[in-house]
Image (tube, rainbow, N blue to C red; front, side, top):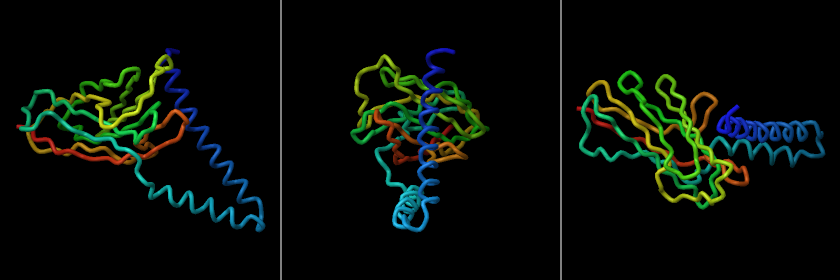
Length: 194
């Protein structure tokens, strides 16, 4: 198994561990009986608030192509991020696009010491960025470009490309050096293909 694969596996296992710990905590409070009713209410409120989470930082789509591009010309899309002062160790970004009219050419990390992995599905690009183990620098961002996507348009028209909060079980998020998970604010852009 390559080092990059090991890092992805460790990241996923860490997130799974946090999920299991949360389930364990809920099961303990539910089996404690009526004497801990106040604690049960508190836990319930915490998980209800998660569905309307406060945003921390942001992921932003932008393109230097302001006047539109032509069919067959590569469209560059930049994803910038703001970690709200947190030391970033990893992120997941979900990008929706018109897969019938665009072909994904590449996704390149613009953050020193980070690797980016892309998985393309029908109308969705799942990006995962992971800080390498040899990178000892803090990764605190305030609007810097994290990833450059290259898309190839196949047909003229006006198209929406958007960062999604979630799709199926995947979520756009970032993780700091203390394994805290944050859900950033997101945006979308409109692209004109001539």
